[in-house]
Structures are given as C-alpha cells and as structure tokens.
Amino acid sequence: MEADRCVPGNEPSLVLFISYVRVEIVCPHRPTLRGLRAAWHACLRPADVPPQVTLRYRVTQQATMYRVFREASEVTATTEAADVLPLLEAALYADLRALHAGETLLHAASLTRARAAVVLLGGSGDGKSTLSWHALAVGFRYLTDELVVYDGARVWGLCRSIQFAVTADTRALPLFLRDADRATYRLRAGGGTSVADLPIVAPEETQIDRGPVPAADVWLVRVRHVTVAGAGTD
Image 1 (tube, one colour):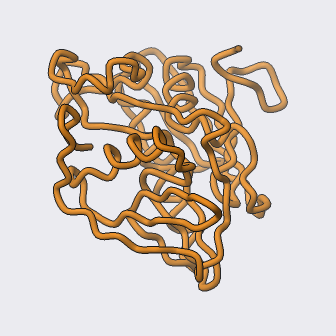
Image 2 (cartoon, one colour):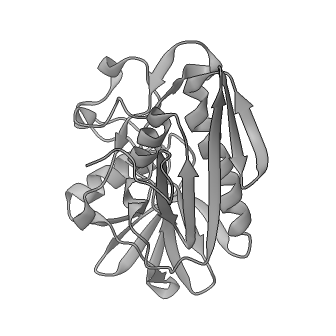
C-alpha cells in the first residue's frame, strides 16, 4: 500500500478523518506523511461521526526552510526536517481543540466492550497506553489513546494510534513492544540534534470502534502509575 494518498492534484498528500473533521495535508516531505499515516492510521477511514468541517494544511519547502500553512495563513516554520512532523501535528491538535470547543475534551484513553466504554483518565506516564495495549489483547476494542470527546450525550475518540514514550535506545523498550513501529515517527529528542523514535502500535481494523457510545454506557476509571510485569508505562 502506498505510504500516502492524494487529494486532487499531483503533490504528495494525505487525507484523514479525525472525529467530525476531514483533514487534508499536502506535504513534499514524504517522511512527514509516513509518520502522520502511522500515528493516525485508524483515521484513514471516516469515523461514525459524519464529517462537518475540513482543515487544509500545506507544507512548502524552499532550500532548507519548511513552512506550514493552514489554508493561506502560515502557522509555523522550521529549518529542521525532523521538526516538520511534530510542528504540523501540534498545529493540527490546536485546531482540533478549537473546533471541539463546544464539547468536553478529556485527556484519556478509551476502549469498548459489548458497546460499553471504559474511559481511562490519567496523566502522561500513568500507564494508559500500556493498559490500552493489554486490553486489546484480551478482546476490548479501541476508541482512542489520547483524547475523548463528550458532547453531553455521547463519547467518541480522536482515534490516534497507541504511542509510548520517546526513546533513543530501543534496548530500553519492554518486551511487549518488540513489534511496535519504531522507525516511522522520528523526531529530535528534547530539541537536541539526536533523532529519537516514538514507538507506535496501530490497532488492527477489527479492533477499532469508531463510536460514538451513549454516555449512559461509559465508565470512568482513574489510572495512577500502572505497572504491568515486563511492560512499563506509556
């Protein structure tokens, strides 16, 4: 399968469906498109929340300068190729948050079983990603690893792939991540010059629940520093 797909035109591009937002990205830097595709793999197909709005981004390159535009407005720029992906994704997150201002956004992971949803609330490093990965292995389905949307009646997820802590040393990864994608999403570690990997696990299509789930069928669980033997945390 191609690493990217095209919106009208001949430039390298990618179309994502995140919540009710259609996202069109045109970018000459193909590693950025491959990283986005890996991170948002589940969003290559529309969610069960119909698209209502479109976001359009374009990345341009002149010599060593990369510029990121939303429609005709420049939102950021960099001379480092490794920064294009995280800067573009940061702009995307900011816009997604603004477009969901009428709903409640929870920093949480969420999984479903028998059409009921479990929402895992916790901070970065508390183990939401680890729990999500292990829940999929025992038959749960996946809504999100990061942001849950609540509109007063239903919940659904911004369905990003499961991601774990950035690492420059793959030997430090737990054994259960031995098959994780550790090459596609690469970025500069801590703003320095060395490049690190963001381990990513994309759920299988049969494991994805595109929602929404009625709020009456949602359980909230507070996660605090979960440790699974041989696993570590997110």
